[in-house]
Image (cartoon, rainbow, N blue to C red):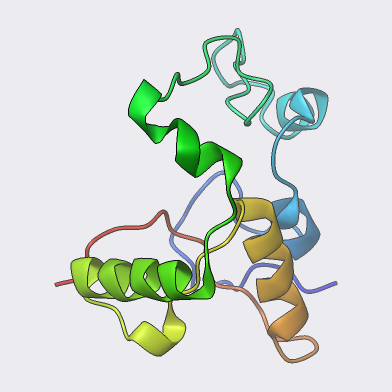
Length: 124
């Protein structure tokens, strides 16, 4: 398994195995073992686990019951690309971050290091 590349910005996760970066949600015991000096208590904000989950407005209820059409997904991706200044061919709508992280790992050439994952941010 490849390790994070040495040219990544210094972070507590630098040097950890790529697999560790692919796990998302839950696993508080693993996170505590990896970061023993982090402040406590830990709060897992994973969907469905967060004890203070986000309550959507009532007028969004229809969006929570229906899967988006291909046209709606394409429009979402185009708007996101424009908003973040990204190449539309490199934007994809996903049902959650874990599937994106796993696909990112699968689609990289064997042995190629992952520099770092960044939260979505506007690129200027």
